Length: 138
View 1 (cartoon, helix red, strand yellow):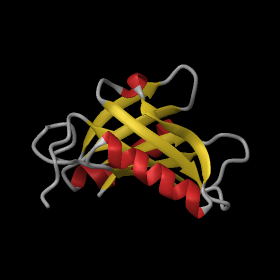
View 2 (view 1 turned 180 degrees about the vertical axis):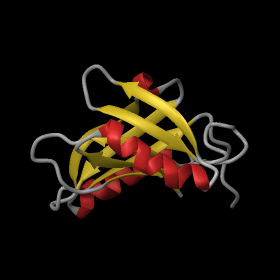
View 3 (view 1 turned 90 degrees about the vertical axis):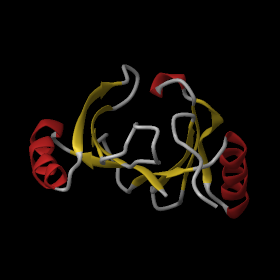
């Protein structure tokens, strides 16, 4: 399941209005801004169940484009930290570049465990387990 997508944009405020028109018409809501302090500023939208604990939700985050940045940033949901670790190891074995090893990401919230990898095209994956997500059906 897709947990989240980062879309790199040149103007977060202007893009926010464009994406709000479409996403809110589909029942998504604004999650608000996130200033990481050390990284990119983000503004997010969540689907109907995002963060509810009832099901795994999806989110779209508008991210201020960094100089020279290209590609897609895609977050994929994992069922456990062990699954995050296994996916990270498999990616590295397959030739992905480490872009942030497995581990807790407390700056994104309690129970957020992730690993990041990048391919040779500049596309990035984040494999993430959130303790707030219920287990997916088998």
